[in-house]
Length: 155
Image: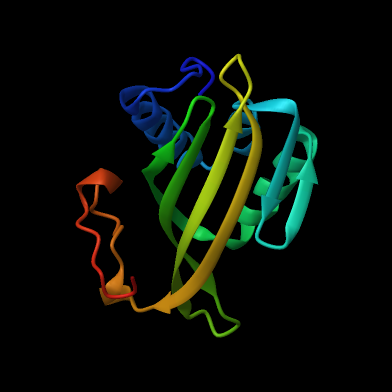
């Protein structure tokens, strides 16, 4: 993610968002953390983190609980060294009886970048909505999250 550096244009901001989408969809905490400065500052919902070690720990726990994670990020706005995105991701959790409950998270992030293109600050707000298997957008047969038409059902 650091290859694209500020100041951003519409084209480079869009590229940065899609690189981040692909990176997060790897679900590899150590790889994702490389896109952030060593002293990165995060707010993720009600949790606050500082530094890539805390980010790796957070993401490891996140993806242990959020099975089947699939994410789509869309450019919302940008300026010289900032990007705002809206995102949607789906995951499931398994109940004690073995039943899967799917969720879709709707949210917004604002990102601030260092001169080298790594993210220095990330703030995320999101809400999880229970969905049925039939309501999923990012089913297993979807090869590309960007090919899915986003419904306005929950928007």
